Image 1: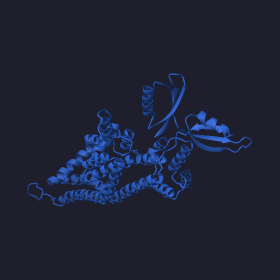
Image 2: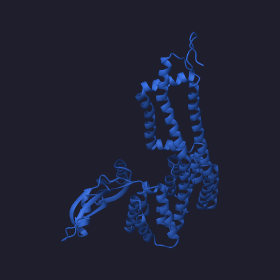
Image 3: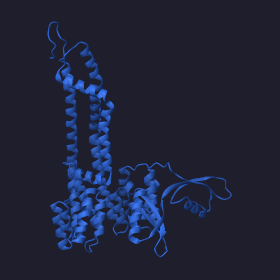
Image 4: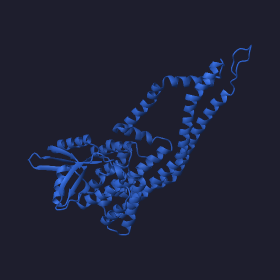
Length: 452
């Protein structure tokens, strides 16, 4: 997420300044409007924190020093460099700075190393400095250095980590922000590392399982398109030349080939338009909720994704819950961290209002949302009655961790089976069409045209 700074004045005329996190300027404006409506202040300026490239030199030295810095305005960069004793040569905004991706594997390694070093009693400040100096990925290195700098400036852990959710992942930044203010940092990093390692192993198994089948599927589809668009027109020309009747499957395929060749643009539009429209819809806020609801309804795979989301919810809740009554903020943060927009929406729209408006307990409100299974409701109800809600959440998290670990192998096997069946059907179809052409024969003199 990007960081924005707003400046303005209160009703009393006092200067006001603050920062917010938002994916873009439009979303930042919406948050500012909410602040203005709630606190009755007047916001005069909104600046995004961006990258600036500068060229400076020391007084009495002609050597040019290049560098890059993040700031809200060029004036801030100028003032900062002047305070450091530099003479300004040039300052400009870096518009063409590509955002390189960070492989999940590198994030997992970073969290694992942090967990191991914390267990060895290394200071967190020293850990970040040491790991940042050894990182090869420039974006991850920059992220760690910025986290280090913000923490040293005394910023709140949640504010520091949440703006890097696009790099580290939403679950990771929530857990790290919790760790920064807790007394058991090593334990939280260890649990986070275990979850990320398990998730990474599952994704690796899926990729390795799908790589060769995906290649074969693409090759088979390419062969089918080549057969229909190139081979069959040649066959059709030959058969028409000699006035030969053809079998029904071959005739139908020739008609399809002719239709595609005569209407290729319309066919491409008809094929691509629904795909583009569907992708655009699922990328919207409402569409993501619908997509995540569909996702957890898919047989076998959906159950695994669903239970993984429940595990994350329970683990974050356990890490945050203080035991002092029903902590609404804890429930809200846990729902955001679970990674499923549908579950998050049900919790925010049903569970939290039910607790605040109707005074229901957590387990009763969760039962109304219809997204939590009965074993979760029973476990939480027992925890509420005995005053061990936090421990109940930990038991649920550990239970789903073991269950998802055991089911990952089965999911990989099911995916492999489905892909294999699809490839087999495709190959059988091509083979049937090809073999039927072999039964075509020219008409004998004195006989009626017929296809064998």
